[in-house]
Image (cartoon, rainbow, N blue to C red; front, top):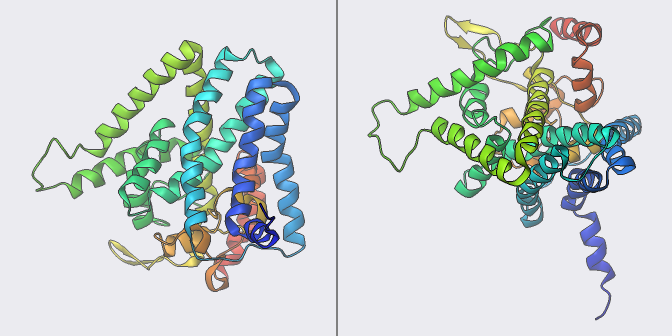
Amino acid sequence: MKFDRAALNALIRHPATAFALASVSPLLFLVIGALAGGVWAFLGWAWITIFLALADRIARRLGQHVPSTEEDSRTRGLLLAVGILHFPALVIAAWALGGGTGLGPFGWMFAFLGFGLWFGQVSNSAAHELIHRTERPLFRLGMWIYISLLFGHHTSAHRLVHHRFVATPDDPNSAEAGESFYAFAARAWPGAFIAGYEMENHLREGAQPSWRQLHPYTTYLSGSALCLILIGLIAGVTGVLAWLLLCAHAQVQLLLSDYVQHYGLTRRRTGPDSYEPFGPQHSWDAPDVVSGLMMLNAPRHADHHGHPARPYPSLELSPGGQAPILPWSLPVMATVALMPGLWRRIMDPRLKKLATR
């Protein structure tokens, strides 16, 4: 067989390759770490934290960014692959952390932290992209990713509530200026669950009930119960406990993303029950290369809100230069958000500066 250098170069330079390397490579280290423990578990955690932050910072100082491109079969296939990989990764993580591979305290801690970050940052990004797709199989794949993380209601709340009411008091997932992450999370989780349920009920008012069309919340709750049973059969009671901890860790990452990306940004009220249209100025963007690739361009949040159906490779950074830019990458700022005092010292002056524009 003749070596085709041109074909190899085209493969390497294709956007899907960069997205795949950034999103899937940490999972490889994490799976090896789950099986072997020790330094491999540490490397998986270090890749998705220390290396990621350093690479992002260097790329930002060099002015590097990823250009938007049209979606094709490869980038679409990568999205599907990441979504499917989530499920065996979750089972392996629960099994290993439940004692299946004899991880010691060192390996257990870094495997738990690393997997939780991957589920909350990469699985979430894939699921978020999938629930905005119109094709039913892709939508359902995204929905089941959230269900497996005990966060199925996000499928309804994100699309029907957050996108409609973002940056207003009617959106549970928009953080107010001065609000700590902990206060935000305490109201956002139940608030989104209830708001999503109410919106789904509103959409079904007057519709003829059918056994073929289960209420989405029935699917979310029964699906979560099914996941619990399957994890229990595969990994035992300790595996179930590990899975519950992983779900909690991942959910914190999901809530941190919402908190950081809309902190303090509000839409001007134009009437008793109306607000100005959403614009790029109502979402924080992050231009960082490696975390952007890993999270399938999710940090280009302003363009996503402006065009929810736009495929992830086509999302643009700060449309028209109007979106405010986070001082560090989204994962770093999510870590800072866990320290309310430091968070306010960094972000509140930027909010005041935006208000004077």
